[in-house]
Length: 622
Image 1 (cartoon, one colour):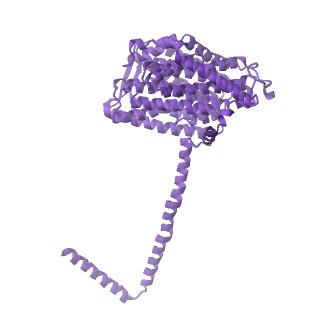
Image 2 (cartoon, one colour; image 1 turned 120 degrees about the vertical axis):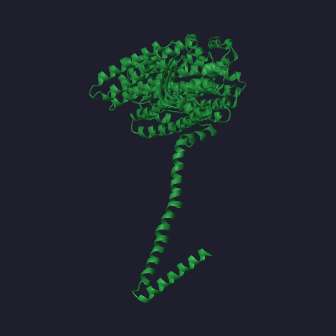
Image 3 (cartoon, one colour; image 1 turned 90 degrees about the horizontal axis):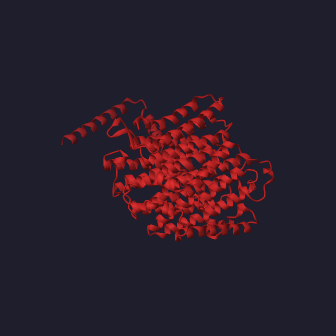
């Protein structure tokens, strides 16, 4: 392949973004048509790149090892294909869902600008252009969120500040790694995380997992679920940021640093992953708004990816990477289905919905398949990737992480039993009597993602052998016999898989119990867990944003400003206003009193002054 062709995946969506920005707002259909066709061309380019030999484009740029360098290899081909596919589906869905939006020109421009920055970040092989594209995504995220509703600006600022802090950590980690290795080329770095390089690893890890939406850097995501357009939620937190964050985390753990099984970096990553799984899914369980429920699951599922990569075991790493693409599929499908419901029914509040499967059968089918996939139901793709993560965590010898993952599986299925039951089954609310199925571009996007969930589950050998195994082929711990992951994929008759299926039965029992206790109202099925003595207090604190580091940071800064105003600023003002001014007034009064116009007084002052000067000179000459 001609190395210059590597610029196409960056320049093509960039040109589409410029076209959208420059096209007059009155020409809507042309913009939508060009957006869909341009996104399809983007997919064609990504498909044509897939399977190509490793290609490197190097353009001398700023000297000192700072070059504009792009690299196409197995991993970047895979992620580029996923980015282009999701861009196309979101563009197709947006032709209906975003029709008539007041800021449609900006929306499509930011959408394709995000795709261009994502392609650049995936292909970058030098840290400086990588940081440029990575930070560009922070700006486009802010812009896309602002396209939303009334409170969107505040949420956009929150996402920008949290992302900016974590990106600063990543840049600092890159600077430390540069100082230790002397190079900025990613493909030339492979170090053991010790001393300063360990500090570099943890800082870069923060940047990667924050981009993916891990706790505690996740708090903007549930807010964005309410304020941002649903297409943005399906495109950014559910798909692209998961892809890019876990892609970068995988590169950090596989390429840049040599992470060993049960080493300190591995244990830190697995611990953070397990906590993210459990804490976020507990929050998802009690949500009574469909989009907020999905947003917390978008956070929780990141934990499985981090846990898998953190095992440093080949099957665990492969499971984490496979779960990354699986999650992007079913979570985008779920958000798109939620957007379809919202557009037709006018709400995503669970208590106001019900019985929509009869009037929206295609949306319901897509939602239920994606919900089954994220819950890990055999034989869908979520079952395969989760089982691989379970096996990987079990192989580390730390069963506590496997137990945490199983607990997450129980509450995930319970959450989607509650959500699916509330929205699509049971009696239909009177205000939804006229609801009907959405338009074909919407249902096509949802069903396409649902079909991929089936394909990547039943025929899992396709993605595992075509996408995942080539990525791990050069990994030091990936011995030949460990690379045949398909042997585990659908092996349901083993202890770990049987326990996983038992977890699903427990979730079903919890839902049925809660449904009965809630007066046969599905949206109240989680209340028995919500009202548990200790959990209820923790839930109240969480809903009051006590655990939100951003909100608490804002309150801390406000308290600090009040303290400084009262005990620093006001005393300083009092000193200048009273002490300094009082002394000045007294001095000026004394001087005015002394200037009485008598010549004898002036002569005495002059002689006295000369005497003091003469004494000082004499003292200095001794």
